Length: 306
Image (tube, rainbow, N blue to C red):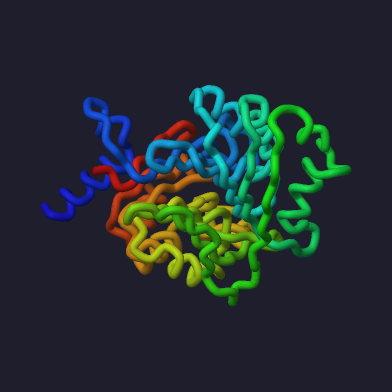
């Protein structure tokens, strides 16, 4: 009975639009899912999230194609977004970044300074600071962006990508802190993030394979919410090469248990994963007893309501 009660309480946290419809609550953090899909076009935006801090949109986590559209559909005021966290630079996580900058600049009546964080470069992938320059810097694809609306300043920090790198605090701003740690996503440099505020926390795994789970477990220790990208089925249910890029459900359950997270939200899903939702839940349940939900575009998740 205690387990059932805990599960129902967890669901209330994961589906706040239903749980708090009558009485608005004050929440330190709220996650708005702009995009819950992946690289293939099947009716969802690609991975992107807005994090509200004390009710104000402050943080953009990834900016996959469709994020720009969802911001408009939700009528979100992004004038207070000052921090951008990029987990990696695949198109389905960064393709709408320039569009976001443009939208913010055209609706602002004062200068803008962005704090942008993302992985260092390797192989075919530039470091994040170079990526931003290639988009909107001098000589970049859309260099006009800086002259088309409010003046913008981009302060970009490239993050370590070796798996033996230490967890690092990259932001400490009036009680809002952000930590990061390197993960692994095939040949694409990648990182995961933890946002902490007023005693509550949310962790974004980004895309990662199972080799990086020890790092994620450390980062997510006792977090209120872990948003884990679930793009494959347990072996051999998905193409073999995809397991070099993504973590299967059973391993996600193991990581959630080891880290002691209070609730789990699965995102970056594909039709084959969604069609096997019961099996995915069962696989995670083999190790993790907390609440599990599947993300959809426009879902709002309140973290730490009082």
